[in-house]
Structure formats: structure tokens, C-alpha cells
Image 1 (cartoon, rainbow over the protein chains, first blue to last red):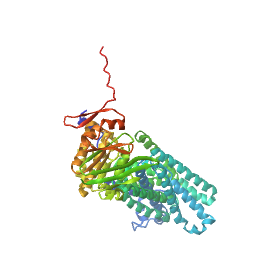
Image 2 (spheres, each protein chain N blue to C red):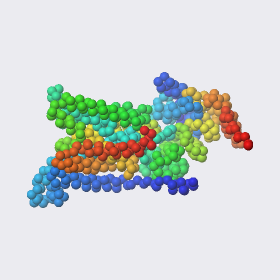
Image 3 (cartoon, rainbow over the protein chains, first blue to last red):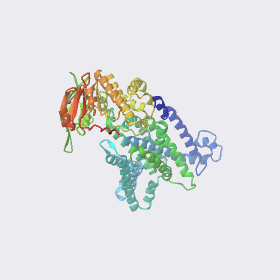
Image 4 (cartoon, one colour):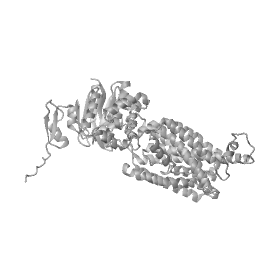
Length: 360
Length: 269
């Protein structure tokens, strides 16, 4: 075969879209998703009444405006903001974790990092409610995200030390170790459920299913600084994660401080997952689905992939949460069930595609 | 001569096994050294210690005036470039994106000529927008070589002649590309770079290297001129193969294994 014919037989060249265009496009979709989410729910607020309810228009003549305002500002807006930020945190954390493990199947929920955080958060609930924890009970609200972060961090470090040997990460060992770690954390949660009293039980069950109902402004407010810091930190590790795809030795040869990059990534993933878990429990698969779709569309370079993942994750979880609170209205579906129902088949599809390539 | 890299009594012991045992080696700018030896001789371990990736358990490696371990990874990357064996890329980066990784984060516009030149040198210009994992093993190896050439060029632009380390760079290449790659490395040596390559093809080593390092069980079995270092006795001792050494018309030695049985010709009917 001549060289020209050979070139023609190969698949067409893949060109990367412009970064600014991708980010702006995704932000527009996020704005649309948030607008839709504002209008639907137990108390429907038609689009025409939205500007007045949000306070953008001085026309407060409609009799429903004050009720609309109450619903929006005290219930719906904090919840939508939390859904968007949790989605952003989980999707970006998934993308970082996949870069760190050089494995598109890594996801904080799948490999037990979320479970570790949930276990620590549940333990914090039981402890602060017991007579031993009486002295710190007043700061239970601040303690939960910290405990979840510590739990996630411990799990990530254990996972990394098990699955990485001599600079290589075995995909099979990584997934199996993650499974075992998740099982251990879940056994711990089970034990806590067993010893918990009725009131604690209700709080803990919340983590098991994953839900954004009952989101308040203070809870939402814990997410914002972590997301902002994480997005800034993402820019500083983006190039390192790109080069890490060559393997740890080759990344070092290329001038990357691999140990530092790994430490930052592990702390970031743990903080992002931990704070998300502390607000809405274990929500899986967002971290797998979003970066995978984006890598196919915009390429794997992390400088664009990480912020784009955060926005698409926000879109996805805003949509999922809107669905969760309307699909079986007036009841509510835990959002963790919804993301698992969509995400698990997606995960299987990636696994089947990978089987030939990665030598699983 | 100005030695860029000095290894003194370098050893590596892991769990009671000595992989590399007390090797002294001076590598000067402008020379190309081939490391040869049987499997398990410690070639890759030695090269990884010369690159600063593995810390020797005994002895020391000096790059310029400083211990190689004293450089920050970024500083080191500007003074030595290394191509590892078996680089496996999971994510769908394009060939161009992989080669750009050699620029160490320089702006795209500034590094573009270097990337173009390296892609041209390894013959992958028309594959620049292809996803690396869809290329053949040999094409991927050439893309990684282009990346390492870009890294070397970036470093040499700042600090002058550097060090280029290659771990079996020709293992997946066809004959044409083996020669192309070794000639690329040879050109770097002519421009003052110190080149060290692990080669399995002894003929390639004798043809292109200035000096040959023969490793056997972690020790230096011989080191010296490419024309005299490889002898039938040493090959028999190291590889347990009988060879005949002949010379081309221009006086370059080459070797022919003798233990291979000639293929029996089918008896004519």
C-alpha cells in the first residue's frame, strides 16, 4: 500500500475545539439547566413569574410573588446551588483521580473514597451525640465536612499505597482494592447504624442513599470555598497530570515533581469528595461519566478537561436533582439511586470497550 | 575531555540482590556510548541511575559539578532527557500533544518549530493529529523519541549541550527506523550532546557508537572503542553464543552468530 493510500485508510484527524468556546458553551447550558430547575418542583413557578420572584424586576403585583420568593430563596436556590457545586466537585475529583491513576475507570464513589468519607461523617454524628462527644456537640455542623475529608483522605492514601507499586498502577488491583475498602467502610457504617438511636439513624441513612433534600444555606456555603480553591489548584496540576499519563518514571524524566503532584492530587480529591459527601452523601458515577464524555469530545488535556468537567458535572447533577425531586412528586427519589441507575450501565460500557485495550 | 556525567562505584542492591555492582563511567559531550549485555545484566537499572530516577545504594552520579540527586526535577529535565522502555499511554492524547509534553510547559507558539522539526525527524508529520493509542508500537516509540528530542532541544537552548539517555529505543522499530533513530542520536552527539543508549543489536552498536560498554551480571565486563571491545571470546562468555566477526569494506566490524543451523534446502525431486 502506498503511503498516501495508507494515510487515507486511517481515521480522519481529530481536531480539538477552542477552550473558550467549550467553557462558554457549557456555562450557557448550566444557566439553562438552573433556570429550568428554578421553575419546576412541588410549587411550580412559571418562567413569567421568575424575574419578580428572583427580585430582578420591581413588578411585585402578582399575588404569588411573595410565596415564590420564599420557595426560591429558602429552599430551591440553595438546593440548586448545592447540586451544581456537588456535581462540579465530584466530576472534577473524578477527572483528577483518573489522571492520578492513569485509569478512566477511577471514581471516588466506586473505589470507596466516598464510603470512607461517609463512614467518618457517620462516626462523627454518633460520637458528637454520645456523652463522650458532648463537649464538641456545638460544632457538629463544622465537624461533619472535616470528618468526611479525613475519612476520604485516609481511604485515598490506603488505596494508592495498595494499588501503586514501583510507579505502576495495576487497574485490576486498583478496582479490587477499592471494592474491598468500600466494603470495609460500609461494614463500619452498618455497625454505626446498628448502635445508633432513632434520631441518629435518620441522619445516617441520609448518607447511605445520597440526597440533596434538606439542603440549607450554611451547608451550601461549605461547598463554595472548597470548589473555588480546587478549581484554582486544578490549573497548577493540569500539566503535571497530562505528563503523568506517560508513567511516573517518564513524568519525572520530563521534569515533573511526581511526588508533589501525587500529594496535591490526593489531598484535592479527598477534600472535594469529602465536602461533597458531607452535604449530600454518596453520589456515585458522576466522576466517571462526565470526564469520559468530555475526553471524547474535547480531548484529555487537563487544563481544559478539569474546569469543563466541573461545569458538566454541575449541569448533570442539577438535572438529576431536578428529576429526583419531580419524578415521583410529592415524594422524592434519593439522587444517589438516580446517578447509579444511569452511571452503572455507562461504567459497564466503558469497561467493555477497555477490555481489549487495557489488558484487564 | 569534558565529562558531562561521572559515575563513581555506582551500585544498586535491592532485597539482597545486587543488580549493578560498582560501575565507574565518564561520559563526555560529543560522544555516543552504547550499553550492551545479556538480559538481566543491569543495563536499565544503570541507565535509570544515570538519569537520576533511581538513587544508587552505593557510589555517586555527578551531572556537571553537582550530585544528580541535588537537582530539582525541572532543572534536571533541562540538562538530561531520557526515553524509557515501554511507555503506555491510556488517554487519547494526539501525537502532537505527546510531543509537546517535551517542551516543559513553554507556550505553544514558542515551541511549535521544535515540535515540527522533531515530528519531521521521526517521520510522523502526517500523524500529528492522530490519537497516540491508535498508532502501532513502533510509531508510538518514534512519537516518544520526538518528545524526548524536543525536551533535549529546549534544555540545550538554555544550558548548552546536555545528556540524552535512551533505553532500548529501537526495540519496536523496523530496520529503516532503527537506522533513522540511531542516526538522529548520532547527529546529536556530533553537536556536542552526550548520548548513552542501551542497544540489543550489537551490529548497530558497533556501527554507530563511539564507545561500547559491555555489562555482565551488574559488572563492567569491558569498555572501550567500538571496533575492539566486542570480541568472539567476550560474546561467548556473556551471551553463550559463538559468533564470527567480519569487517565491512570501510573497516567496521559486524558479527554473525555461528550456532544457528543453516536452513536445509529441500532435496530436488
